[in-house]
Length: 303
View 1 (cartoon, rainbow, N blue to C red):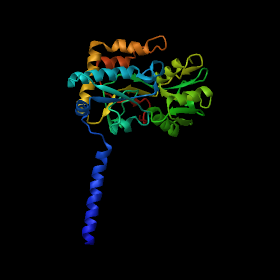
View 2 (cartoon, helix red, strand yellow):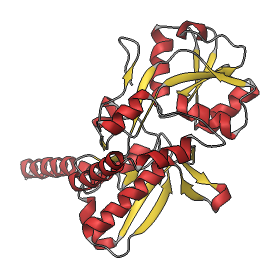
View 3 (cartoon, rainbow, N blue to C red):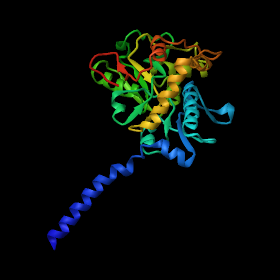
View 4 (tube, rainbow, N blue to C red):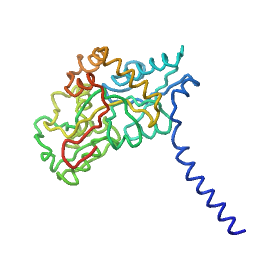
């Protein structure tokens, strides 16, 4: 009787172990669910301007370069599934929670400023590269920031869950004697830099330029001269969600081939608020769509 009880407990434990990952992971066939529910949920960022943000001047609607591309994917989904109507829901996600919420099925596409990295590929899948940035530091004008060694003795702000947090943590442990201070989001880190409680803010250059432009801080802040990484941004999809990824690939492929991507890019990056010309790596990604992972520019370090 005792032996039988132990056998039952062992079977129950084994069943629980097998069942837990299944319960934690959302079903992979999002297209089939969309066909049934006529709804899709896009994960957007609160203030990753100009990629993905909540536009307070437009009723709090989601907007940005990445959001426009995801909306093009939604239209392709409607055509593929022959749906007359498709309800689009938006959910704000932070850098730290974007992957967990995608895995849990709380969002179906992540439309932000997320770098495709090999580490993240273990958990999620990425569409074609839509923009290429690089980690740099934002400092008060007059602050010397020619090399990473100039960060010595500084307190450097980073955002929680970002590639800059991961890379700067590695660098300050091995390469340069600086202190890393983690903030919940880019806005908080930027405020700390303006207040002088940190001496530098490490983040993707495109996002730093966006913060400077929106806060009209061009006369007070400047980018450092060194680049720490290559950061290819892409739309995130659940791992093994093959049907949905096919639509993402097809949508961006059409936009790139037809050059419809050009006016979308110009709308968000070449306007009266900001000027970020199309970089060589971004242009190459439009000409030859790829899903290359980002890399650190210093040997021995990873994103």
